[in-house]
Length: 359
Image 1 (cartoon, rainbow, N blue to C red):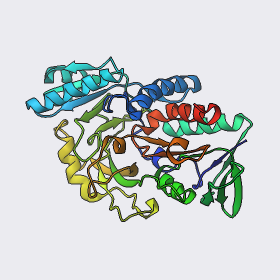
Image 2 (cartoon, one colour; image 1 turned 120 degrees about the vertical axis):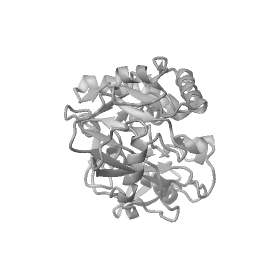
Image 3 (tube, one colour; image 1 turned 90 degrees about the vertical axis):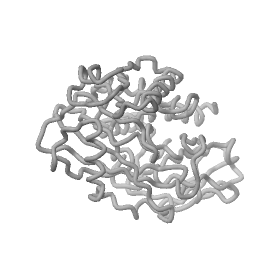
Image 4 (cartoon, rainbow, N blue to C red; image 1 turned 30 degrees about the horizontal axis):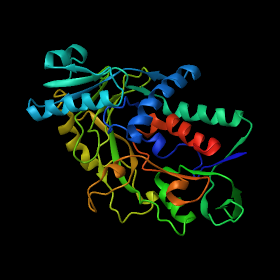
């Protein structure tokens, strides 16, 4: 029997529902990293699942645009393309000048670009609802909403992991801690002789285009920024509404903030001028007054720039099991930020094999 414990009143109401709803191709992530492996595998699993369940999805493709003509920018594009090839993504095309770019996206300006035809957008809410239906139809899964893990223990001599859940003690053979923003906090409650990695928070603001139909038919990204994000990009909607949103940026939250509930999820108005500036680098015709606040989301990060620079492990997903902390049947999923949604089915596939087959 499987019990899904959800602290909120609905499923997927935090990180899973406050993102760009993009199916990523697997371009950015270091070769052999978990992000690279699970993104590429998850992309195919996700497209197949969308088709099987008739969930809205658009494989619209995306451009990654060099907005200046410097040699460095063009070299970064070539490095990204090679990185994609190293990850098994072999469909990336080079657009070597502005005419090539405008042939695909007439409103985009740039000196060169990469075109990724396998990138898409989808209805993440319908996806999560479908997963819930699948779980409930299995006959072995129960969902407990508005339920919190207050503590627990891994010291049971009979091999059980104990969870204290709203005053009830649960004895579990296996526990998968995939609590997103709170995953490290739950891990801290369960262990006394092992210190889990700390998660930090980075807010991402989104603004929506109003008063005009979408100027793009594909996603449009700048080169990745130095703050740890993919840049303020344009995301077309998976529906036929012709709407476009821009974001997210990267707004690091003070490491003194330990509880994600203390973070204001209102888009930061003071970011608006920066959004106009960044967007106009690839869409100079963005009209004044056309951006309105949309929503914001929080990424769980495994480093904070005010404390130290990131190493490769801190930039990757972390799936920590018995080999890491010594407790059989216990798995912690940490740092599951982008491309976490794309990777979700591949991550689940990996964890399920560990839980049920020990491999």
